[in-house]
Image 1 (tube, helix red, strand yellow):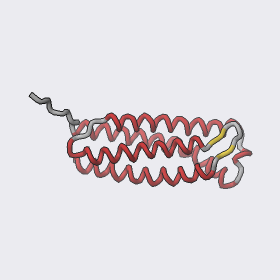
Image 2 (cartoon, helix red, strand yellow; image 1 turned 120 degrees about the vertical axis):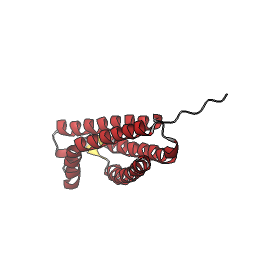
Image 3 (tube, helix red, strand yellow; image 1 turned 90 degrees about the vertical axis):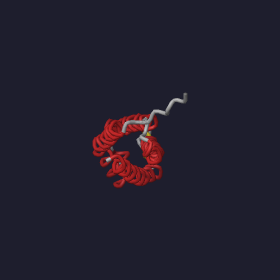
Image 4 (cartoon, rainbow, N blue to C red; image 1 turned 90 degrees about the horizontal axis):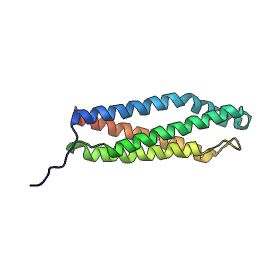
Length: 148
């Protein structure tokens, strides 16, 4: 007797995915003011003039975001998708993993010791994050349309 592979219940999957989207959105909203402050300093060429503690706080906030997104990426990897969502879920996993990697690049672009920002890496990461989040949200909408 062969065992049937266990696939996710559609409702549970939708709720779990919704939780991860909410967590991602909340995290992004919380870090936005720190990002805006740093972005303004980069544009003004005043990163080196920021108070040390403020720059360190921004860096710590970025590191926290990376940790949250790493956990979300891991959860997406572990989630069991309903049969008809296996393809779109696989795409979401890959896209979010790349998104997490892009946030990591941004966090690593900040050098707290020298109080400098690798602007090339920072700017590319911002572009990548925007593109990847847009792609991820498109995939998530497709997933929800499929289960609703």
